[in-house]
Amino acid sequence: MSPRHSDAPQRVVSAAEDMLARVGLNATSIREVSKLADAPLGSTYHHFPGGKQELLAKATRQAGDKVDALLERVLQVGAADGLRQFLAMWRERLLRAQFQAGCPVLAASVEEPVDAVAHEVRDAAAEVFARWEARLGEALERAGHAPAQAATLATLIIASVEGAVAMCRATQSIEPFDRVSAQLLELV
Image 1 (cartoon, rainbow, N blue to C red):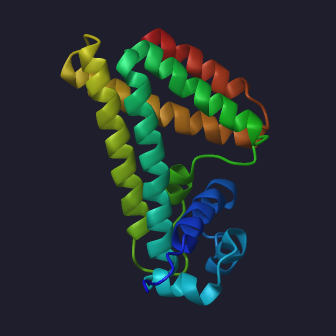
Image 2: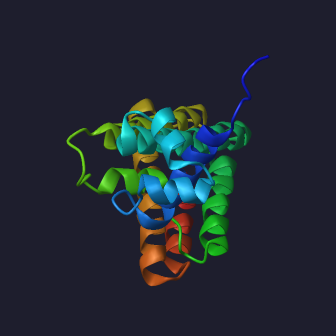
């Protein structure tokens, strides 16, 4: 008889992704993640022997994979329309969460871990941002932008969206996001 497959590791990674988006890197604890995931604390450490850094790096990459898949899908219709859909997704997410959740990848990149010397989580965030920039840059090139201009514009888009999300959380208003979105759409 084969051992029962458990979805606990995936629930734990998803819970960590959620906590990163809501409370940030240092406030996310394995104990709280395990509770949120309804997973035994001991099995969480079993599945993630590298501890919090390993878990949060996986959660960061998972969040990045979701957005990368979304970008791949929406950019098939073109850079401008794809960007419009991407911005609409972020706007909806902010409003639905009532500005209580941001981007887990940004959260992973802006806090220095207080409980570890490793930089696994920040490295994961850097990898994710690079993938998003590359995906956007390719779409912008297909839309007729020169390669250097497309790369610069892709960086500007990611930095602007991430900054606007942070500003919306701080101000508890969608206005910064709407202003940034309008400018980005004009540029593309």
